[in-house]
Image 1 (cartoon, chains in turn blue, green):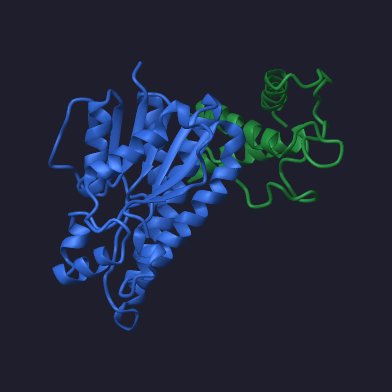
Image 2: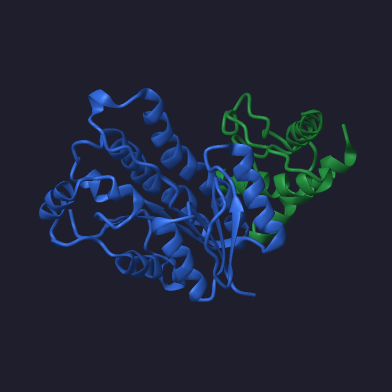
Length: 231
Length: 99
C-alpha cells in the first residue's frame, strides 16, 4: 500500500504544488479545502473541510483512516494572509488569519497525531514564512500567526517526538501565488532584497525541502524551521 | 458501571504495557493509571486514551472524543483509575449519542 499524505489548503498555490508532487512520487494524497478543487491528478483526491472547524477536521481525518489508513505525512499548508497596515486591519480579518494558521494547524496535527502515534511514524510539515524572520511590516497579524505556527512546531516536536513523529516548518520567501499576487511588485522586490538569496522562492525550492523532511531517514530532524532564501 | 467497558479499558492498559515490555502487574478496576502509584507515564496515558478513543468510537459507530482539559490533573482527572476512565468513556459515549 502506498503511504498516505494529507495536504491542507490544496486547492491552489503551494498546497496544490506539494500535493501534485507527493502524488507523482507515489503517495496516496488527500487534499482538502473549503471549496472543491478544479484540478485532478492520479493518486490525488480532494475532500471538503474547513481546518478551523473541529468537527470537520475530526470527520476528515476519521474518513481518511477508514478509507485509506493512517496518514504518514501531513502538510499543514492552509493559510490566509492579510497584507495591510495594522491600523487598518479589521478584527474579523485578524481572527480569520489566526484561526486558519494556528487553530487549523493545531487541530489537523492533533487528529493526525493520534493515528501516527499508533503507527509509531509520522512526518508533519507546517508552513510559516520569511515574513516572521523579517518582522515584515504590513503583515502584523500574518507574522503573528506564522510565529505561533513556529512555536507550535517546536512544542509539538517535543510532545510527538517519543511517538516517532517529526514536526518541522518551512518558511518560503515570496512565491508566485494568490497570496503574493495582491502585493505590488516593488514591495516583493524590496522583500527579496532583504533576503540572503535575492530571488523569489520557487515551488521546487519548497518541494525539495518537503522531500527532505518527510523521508524516513530524517527521523532526527524535528522542531526545525527552514527558511527558503534565508532571512 | 458497564463491565464490558471496564474490561475494555483494562485490556487497553494491559496491551500498552505489554507493548512497552513493562511489568505484568495485574490491572484491575481500581488500579491507578497516572500520578502516585500509577502504572502509566504521561506518554503511556496519552497512548491509552487515544487507543481507547478509537475503540469506543468503533463501538459507538461514531466519533467519540475522550479529550479533557483535566487530563493531567492529579485530583480531578477522569483518567485517575481504570474505573474512572471507563465511567468517563461511558459518559462521553452517551453524550455523543445525544448531540
